[in-house]
Image 1 (cartoon, helix red, strand yellow):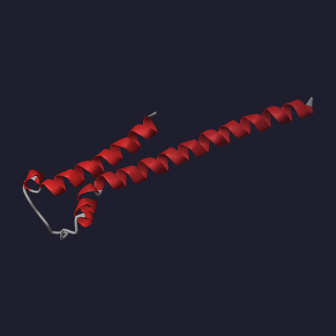
Image 2 (image 1 turned 120 degrees about the horizontal axis):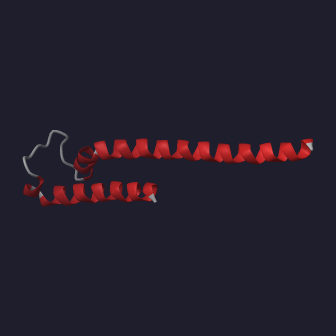
Length: 85
């Protein structure tokens, strides 16, 4: 009787730990995605070798900047879609 309870407790602990680690994984992934979304503009300027203080009113005045920023946003959306599935 004690062996059956031990096996049952072992299975329960395994599933609880698995669920706990999956939640930690999702939380970490969402935090990374949050920071990546915040820094889209900075990463785009760095990738295009533009100065950090580069300022324009509309991105469509610089099509390369607009396209690179859109590409970065699409990457973030792809990762978010991966998390939600």
